[in-house]
Length: 260
Ligand SMILES: *[C@@H]1O[C@H](CO)[C@@H](O)[C@H](O)[C@H]1NC(C)=O
Ligand SMILES: *[C@@H]1O[C@H](CO)[C@@H](O)[C@H](O)[C@H]1NC(C)=O
Ligand SMILES: *[C@@H]1O[C@H](CO)[C@@H](O)[C@H](O)[C@H]1NC(C)=O
Ligand SMILES: *[C@@H]1O[C@H](CO)[C@@H](O)[C@H](O)[C@H]1NC(C)=O
View (cartoon, protein in one colour):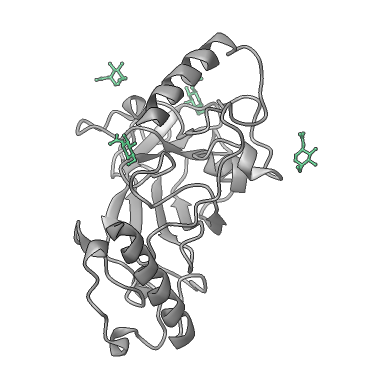
């Protein structure tokens, strides 16, 4: 609506003062998102073959990488689980970001364009990880740390990226890009909507959270959590009976909001 034309104007202004460095967005700090749909999960998995083969993957292959994301328990923020391995021996520490455009069918990582940056901050100066609201929303390694080990694993909650369709910070229709320290793009993958963790409402159909089907409480497993074969110690995803209740309240609230 109006927001789009305002954004376009501000984007034009941003080009004008490009040389000037800001330490937060032209539209201010990133906003905390509290409306992420509970039970909706997105996952990006790097493909078998690297986009930039370089010397690391000259004979084929790629870094392995999986980034999954679900709403925080009450819909506030997004819990990211990040795993990378089989990394190049040189060229690190590696960076990874949410990029604004999806990867086309030909796998061209350049076509994912820039970082997800709805508050129009730009890449420079670099992210101050002590003040994540001032960083580009998509700059995950800037906010939570670069990839300095192989294998690498991290779990954290980001308050600014969103799994709520319609918001500028929504990344479910966008991509993950894995970079060398010099920003060369090693590989990229699209986020794909997955089956929800079984402890929360399953919203995997496109109209899922518009027509809530009460989930019998018996379907929530005792341990909760997402597919145990794909995860190690996921306390953030684990919901005992107590948090299932909270999850359902959040789910019903989201469903109610969606009907407005
Ligand atoms: C970036 O670093 C990688 C690994 O060291 C190297 O293969 C690549 O050529 C570099 N890219 C540029 C643009 O310098
Ligand atoms: C990859 O995408 C970029 C940006 O859209 C484009 O300039 C480039 O030509 C594409 N490369 C190939 C091989 O299609
Ligand atoms: C980073 O953010 C912290 C917290 O707001 C602040 O104290 C510090 O001065 C910032 N550092 C830089 C280099 O701006
Ligand atoms: C992704 O979704 C956001 C929010 O709904 C929308 O503004 C954006 O245009 C979409 N991007 C693509 C590439 O579909």
